[in-house]
Image (cartoon, rainbow, N blue to C red; front, side, top):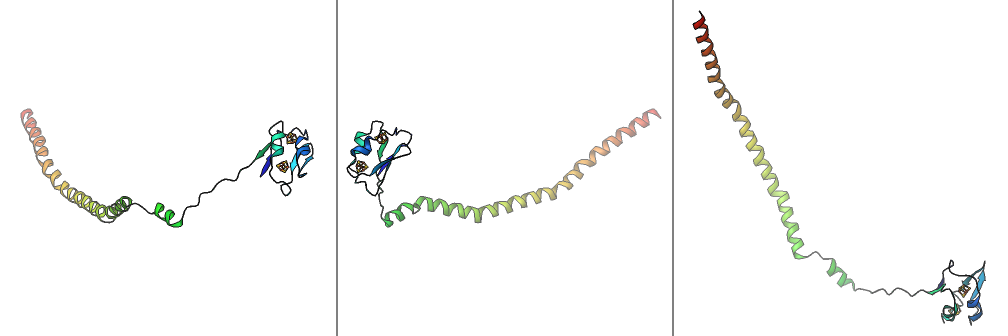
Length: 139
Ligand code: SF4
Ligand code: SF4
């Protein structure tokens, strides 16, 4: 199939003269090809002084059998194993780890008040004792 780059066509008419099929005409000062009449002999391409006429080659499409496509898209064994491992970790190990952390925090929090009261008692006695001694000295 031929195409004309309109901004390169200067309307010289050389292609119109050379076309054996009469497939090219000038419309509004630029060449226009009737693709129904064109036999793609490319005589116009050779004669165009500005290179405005281009041959558009069809793009070759390589067809791949469906079985090959399915094989290419199939997940690899490694990907399957990684997926299964991640799934196991997500469903089994993470909830257990979360339980263990919560239990550990529970135990730690339930111990704390007893420890604090044990540590607080001697401090109060010492202060009280010192005060008593001072009072005694003054009096
Ligand atoms: S390729 Fe040949 S038939 Fe087609 S427009 Fe050009 S000169 Fe005419
Ligand atoms: S020969 Fe080229 S520049 Fe001249 S009219 Fe045809 S397409 Fe346009």
